[in-house]
Image (cartoon, rainbow, N blue to C red; front, top):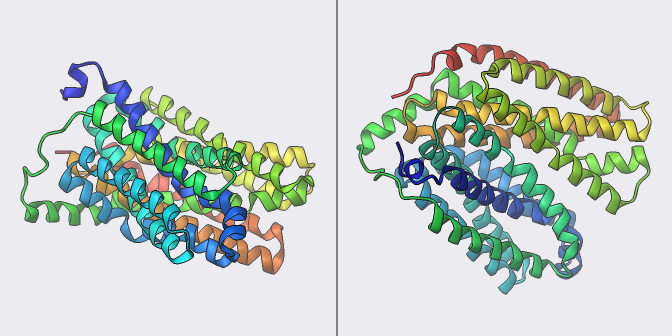
Length: 397
């Protein structure tokens, strides 16, 4: 039993780790809501602002598994403290050197910190929780992205300048460092295995059927999710005839409700629900609701209700896939690498979803985006069925 379990702190640790993930997602989402302020102050074009956000997706696509290897080598707690420290310095640096090149450089550092946060968090949860408690913890952890993005959307308009927003996000990262230092116990030394043995385990994990299918499932989910959410404010303004600010608030609500699906999946898995069935049901529901949204013909309020349902039911998929990562890793120390591989799939899907729907919509209109959603959700169901053997007979050491 871990030290965390003997002194009665595992629940507090889970909430601390979740808070760190939310802070990381806030750093990711702050550019989107601060775009008008960045354009006015630094005279940036939308293409330049796009790079400030796109860096995160690019880093996630390239560095997911390598970031997981860092967490496996140095331990989750040390990696998380390093990640938060990098985000503090990068956020402060961006405000002290207010120019586009320096902002781009500091966003690169924030992206590295973000990647380390999202692989270190599950590594710690794997260490301090067991059994059904672990399933619930991973369900909670999967809420970090929608909660952090929604927080960024809601908090951004409160600040008069983008610099003050950056300072506030850095302050939250500082508070997170203090919480981790106080509440998260040190684990056993990660240097109990040789580099050669670890590399062999990593290669076996990256080539395993289960890990690859989990990453593919996450890529397909992200493709479907961002097929809608990359363009949701524009879609709502067209279908509901609402203002830009109102579209932002409605989009934040739709993003935040994704967490309800995350929590539901953690609850159901902890009580024995089949993981494959959850993914199939959720992907099917996302497919039907997504087709209804993009095809149009429905009243504006009904379209928005479908967006809420799409987000909520879809949240069951990432929670289920993340909770399954420990099942495909042969050793506990390899869990962050498995999570990193999932994040690479997630970022690939994010990029493909935005590009595919943007291209199809520009050429044929919103209606054809429904075909992209339908094909991707059907593929997600197929991947779930292919995952069944790996999840039924996990190989753990």
